[in-house]
Image (tube, rainbow, N blue to C red; front, top):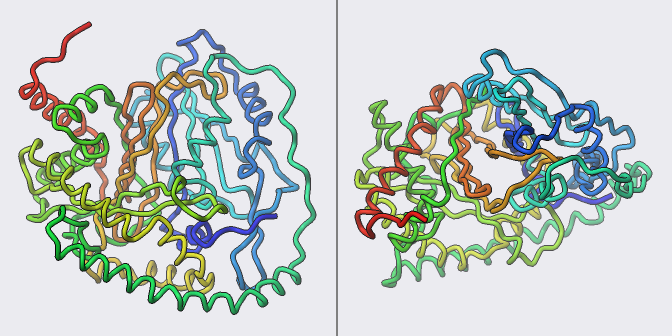
Length: 472
């Protein structure tokens, strides 16, 4: 038995019927690339063999009576692999559009909280014998780093299914005693007064930020609630729309080197350029910059040992009002230096420290009220969208023995920010995944389609500055 941290539990409390807080990934597998024969039952058996290596995939939630404290994880004594692994066929002609619609449908379904919080859908019927895997994990059990760690256990560096004994099974445990859980919660209740101690700490951080902004250093982060309103900044429904596109990482690195910026700066500039193109085509381009919320992993810097989610956030201007792509990427790079300074002042554990004292009932009631009253449409926009850049493998990976040709991640969308862009590097590629509330962005594929165009434009400018890249 293990208790959820406040930050992990907050993804449960903030979830509503329309704001589904799970993350998805679309893996395109190519059995023919290595002459591997794909078999659904063998594939599922290999997954089952490895599950003991990933405890989060066999644990379910157990609530504390009256929600007096955060729930606990317990081993699911009724675990059923057949429930979690689904097999479906893609409608003819089995192309990009049909696959995107299927992923969107899967992403728009809630997970069953009485079972371990994940599903895996095997999608057959793609061209050239390829197979798609759509995985879905609740954010309470996964973030960028822990998701990568899960992939390590499910992937190999060589093709073919592993033949061997099952991993050591996880020991069974008795069901928690609800009376004891309630008693522990009541004993711990005075500790929630530690929330009061967060107030002077927060005021101190604000004072440091104000002092910094009075200096001559780099420009700081944009402030929440100052983003312009766009068509995708409103209350969301459960319906999702997704699209995805694969690009070459070497092109992004060439741009990075030419302008002396970071890969993440180029990613933000590309997303900003794609959004500028999309909004301009719809006659909805704001005069001021769109603002992205950019998750930052704190796994290496957090003092907290427990928990899955160790993350903070940086707010970033995308400079969508700037037409020149080079000026846009340079402005983003300049901002990122100041943003990192302010992030360091705030500290890696700020979100985790506040979430530690999150009262379950209050959070859940507030989330439901915010959703049902559509309050996101009645206050200034906090931020326009989430943009997440996750490092991935720089070598070929074989998911349960089958080559991964592409890997598209999709984070959750939120009330007030109905669009999320997630990017991951994968064996020399940079895979972009876009997910949105379907009613707010019904043509999300137009954003994905603009990505290669923006990269081509930046690459042209980079080569004009440095000269053509030598061919080897």
